[in-house]
Figure 1 (cartoon, rainbow, N blue to C red):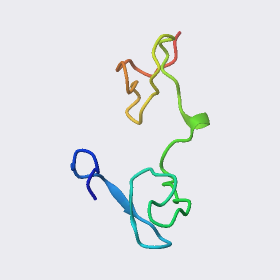
Figure 2 (cartoon, helix red, strand yellow; figure 1 turned 135 degrees about the horizontal axis):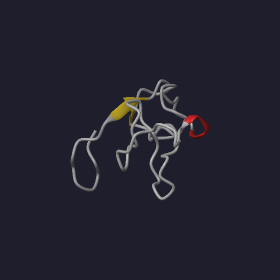
Figure 3 (cartoon, rainbow, N blue to C red; figure 1 turned 60 degrees about the vertical axis):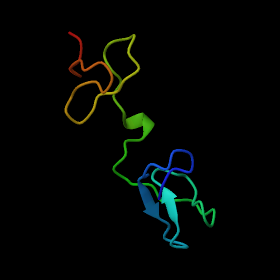
Figure 4 (cartoon, rainbow, N blue to C red; figure 1 turned 90 degrees about the vertical axis):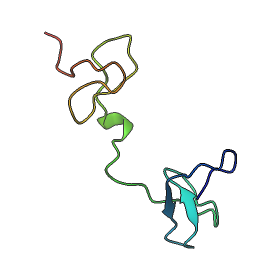
Length: 77
C-alpha cells in the first residue's frame, strides 16, 4: 500500500472481515468500514508513565527513559 499523496510505501494491516489493506493503526477498514482490531501490546493512556520533567510531554518507554527528552524514568527523590 502506498501513500496517495507522495506514493511512499505505508505499513498496513489486512482487515479480518474483507481482506482489504488498511494503514496500520487505522480505527476503521478503508474498504468495508469495519472497526479494526487493535494490538493488545500498545499501552493504553492510563497505563502510560509520564516523564518526570514537568515541562516535557513524553512518556517513559520500555527502556526506562522518556521517549521525548531522554531523561531517566526513575522517581524524583
